[in-house]
Image: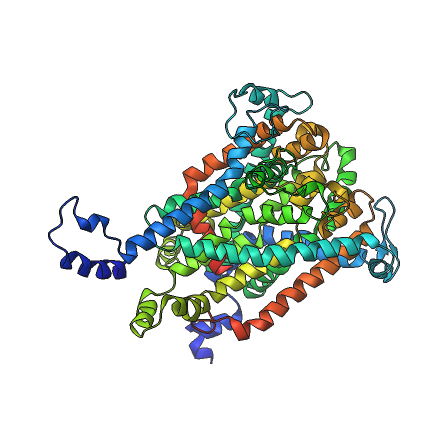
Length: 313
Length: 313
């Protein structure tokens, strides 16, 4: 034992050598800002959110422990949250699948190997550059009932368009169409996935007599499922937290008639208009649990529909 | 690519000698038909995606009286360019100040994110220090934590800091500090991304530099960092874009009108001057143009980044 003192193992046993110590010190210094940020801006706020959710906390006074009252309030005495949950689910259940399918379709068309694909790629991405506030205002103008662009075009075809953002029955549809304006970014993710599908695989299938329809369903779609999974999860997380456009168009009351009162709008006004931080925190924690649950549920389902080329990637 | 060449070859051989106007130009091969269909489809889709931009721009040149004329006017006979001057000089809404604030906010967050995430990502990839892997797993786990469950305690925290520092004359609320300072702590997603990039670099370079006695920071700064410039650019353009778009951060922390960024200024203008449609559109156009300019100069980083977020996220 004592003889092999020059070896690496005993050196390690005695602790780190100079070089290792220097590297460890540098490493710790490099991550120090992140470590602090992790504790101050992530760990502490999550713990505090959970704590506040069990308190009555009107920001000016110290929080008072009230147990589960905020959570029972959600299910009993707050009618607005029911509206908000309904609106958010309505929005999610329509905008996510439609968005997913249309971005996939655009990607497929983009992948048809035409010339100047770069220009189209750019054009489809441009809406993602428009500031969300600007996008929302543009859509309000385009969907104006009288003299708006959309109803003007519908009128040209002899259709009388609805009042969109003024009619509670159509406001959410308008918001969903606005969300579809931004599907180009998702298309580019799909396009990258399509480009990754080995050409010889498709060629082999066509030699074996598979037509393009079969190739699409038996090869392209299965190989694309990891990307579909990613876009699906991101889409759901994003639309559960939809806020900007709904807030710009409908304000904190979700005009018209609470049709655009999304969960996050209600949460925002609870915190920063009513200064009911306790209840707002309970809403935040509840949404967090729902997002986590939805994500886990989708991941559990992946075994039956997501195809991984090589396991453990 | 290769398949289309192969398939086209027999057609060229079977036909007579190619003459510029012969039937070969007119012959509809499946490839040509497919290319034509996809071009028509893409052009049609591109027009739909671009119409909102066109409508924003053309509406910015109309008057509030002709804005919603029925039937719709695609190209007004009189173009009111003076709307832009009116939007910039609108009393109570200092446009140039908003523009500066957005730039300041965008640059501050971008610099903070780039500095911190590249250092932390580097440390996770290339430096050995105690608890490195544990800390990295925690970092990845925080990717699952949505903004909603941290923003209320974070706001309260900054409010406390503000109360604490106000006797010394330092204001925290009502400034961009709460929005920019956390960026210097890092961002889990970009740390993850940078780590992936640094892992892909060869170790020989840093080993050689270390043997030559270079300090760890110098190795990072002078040798490793220049090698991941594309990744830095991806991170920078997306961070800047997201910050320019951000609306809720400033809504929560910034109170004085003169401190608004463009997104918030636009929102306030729409909320308070509900019928100044033309000026709203002029301001929206002006708020979008800088992003489109940046996009055209940094396009490849955007496209690269979209691929990365889609496939590694």
